[in-house]
Length: 380
Ligand code: CAA
Image (tube, rainbow, N blue to C red; front, side):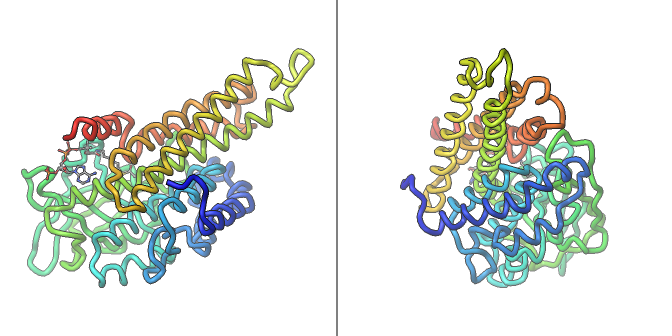
């Protein structure tokens, strides 16, 4: 693995950084306060190719690699958790499987507008009683001859409030567990499809989190993604890619909080001097910077392995696990360095902490990541 970015990756870093500083940074606090989905910001991101970074240009994407995708994610998350997860879901969880499993016709019809950012996608896996145990999905699709009839509900769906297209995992052979699940591409304007916004989240509050409800939704036969009853593997391989994106998001959030804490420590005077002169603060800063670097290297390794066509299941989970746990730790330390001010919304660090916390939960909890890593170590 080359630790120096190539020309394309450098350009991605520059472009994402400029975009984030100019457009994301000024609105991040407002997005958290109002919980409004950043429609215009996402349109601007789409113009720069950030909605389908690793999707080939022939399908509307930017034609870059997974490493470039992690670079983009880190730069955006450095200022805003909500904006970065919106991009992550569209890139990894929707465009990713459409590219990998879609027919040529499906790619033209569904992937291309999503990768261009003309449309927005969401990923319908989680249900009220099927979270970590996502094979326990109760949503079902019944074969009606010329179409599938979809019934059920999904919760905690990022982008749900503004998405046009949903990938929905449903039971097509009840009683068969993970061997009876299929994946469908569903037009969210279909009759019987309704969306209920979910509020009250601790962080990532502008991501359009919603519940999706399907009441006799007719899904055309040609909207089956991949093979019948093979949807669980689509869900799993998709999450492998998604977890790299969430790792990069966690790094961005940790870095944003770290940079603010570093700056604050040089400005805040106590006992007649800047608090950065105190070893207690210096020790925190060194550990914060070191952990961010380590998490980035793990994440880049997972992305590089994906780009090389290697099995990256273990590395994606390890990167997501480590990056999300250090993001909670780093953002928490950033609050500590800010003292009482850090506990108020006058400073951004409390938002970084709230946003970072979910990285240990979504796209598989830290406990699930440990299971995945252990399964690989034990050769299962
Ligand atoms: N790639 C390919 N195949 C895989 C795979 C992978 N990564 N992981 C599992 N499989 C295969 C297994 O090989 C096995 O195949 P066979 O039956 O042919 O041998 C099959 O799938 C079943 O595997 P398991 O027995 O390991 O399945 P399980 O039911 O025990 O579940 C799990 C394994 C790792 C716990 C899985 O359920 C999991 O990852 N759960 C977490 C779910 C999750 O991450 N949800 C996130 C929702 S999306 C989200 O959060 C988006 C957002 O808001 C941002």
